[in-house]
Image 1 (cartoon, rainbow, N blue to C red):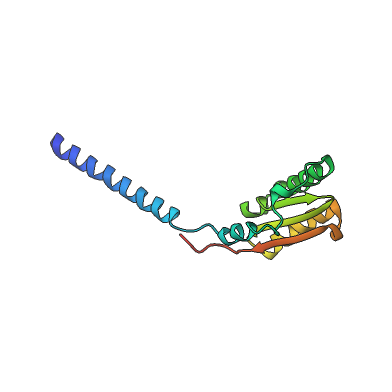
Image 2: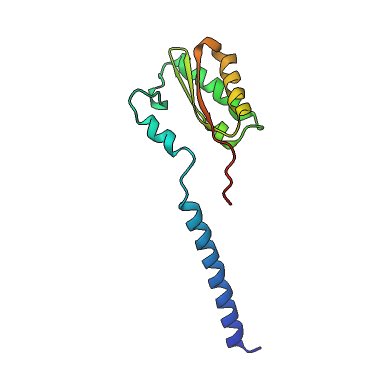
Length: 133
């Protein structure tokens, strides 16, 4: 095989590889994240959001203890590891999507261990697994 044919075949292979990657990127960026509706909901001034958490030492420690417990639990999904934990005056609000009812309950249990059941508001939603490729 001469050098021209080898160069042509190599160039075609590289082009096809880039085209396949571009298609994958287009597919990924064209889908909405699971929590789009939640973000719209959280724009409502009546909804508790993470920026409303109190900056006093006891509330920061409460959020830290719960977050450490959630992140340490490797059985939880990335969604569960990233739930919002909002503490104000010892009251905790949990928000965000998780993959299952079991994850929702597990996070609520972790918060309850820190502040007690009467001080936890669980607004976590169950989104399930995506069936996208």
